[in-house]
Amino acid sequence: DTDGKEVTVGPSESMSKSKKNVIDPENIIENYGADAVRLFILSDSPPEKDVQWSDQGMISSYKFIQKLWILHNEIKNSILEDKKDRKDEELDKFTNQLIAKFTNNLEKFNYNVIIANMYETYNYLIGYLKKNKNLINLKENYKKILTCFSPVIPHFSNECLSEIGASENIIWPSYDANELEEKDVNIVVQINGKKRAILNTKKGTTKKTLLESTKKDRNINKYLENKKIKKIIFVQDRLINILVNE
Image (spheres, rainbow, N blue to C red):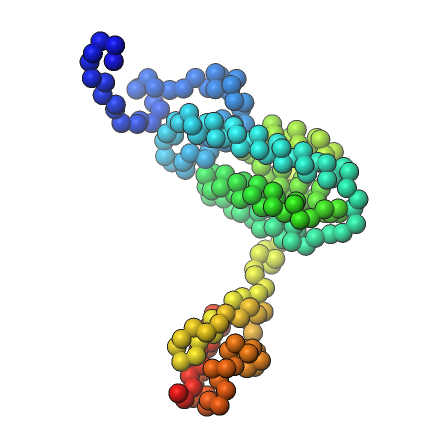
């Protein structure tokens, strides 16, 4: 330092009144907004652990909300301006899965996981909107998504809901548990224990049906031509291993 004395950098510590290292929340809220502060605190650690304060983490949370606002304006323009001529079931499925994640993680107090779900949602919607326009079901799904965001960033969510004309009668959205199960599965196809292909098929496909599919697939059937099948090892929805004479 200026006195010529060596400066020793101590270990990072959790905020504590006894250590007199707490952060004044009023100053932080004034600079970054209450939503950004809530977002950072909830993303930092599970509730049973102390918060490790980080200026960089605070700035990252603030920037993420700015990115959400830019995304919101793009969605808002789509809702208010686009012609509504088609419904996309992929968006319905994504929203249903998201509601289930938020609901379950809230019940388990997994707040840091909820923040991860929010980042996942942002990344999904950014890519999705580039490819999909004129959606009839965009507003309803976005309303559900904003409602899920509201426990973490309530001011942001309320403002966005007002801007799309969906701020009335807000209730926590429900989800369809039956739709959470994947209807298709990827099954590994082995010939004499060696992986030869992966078949995408309906969940619950029988061994007989799957064997017929392998024989119709040219990339697999070349290993079966002129060979006698000795045994078939079948694991439902996971694997089929066809043993043949070499």
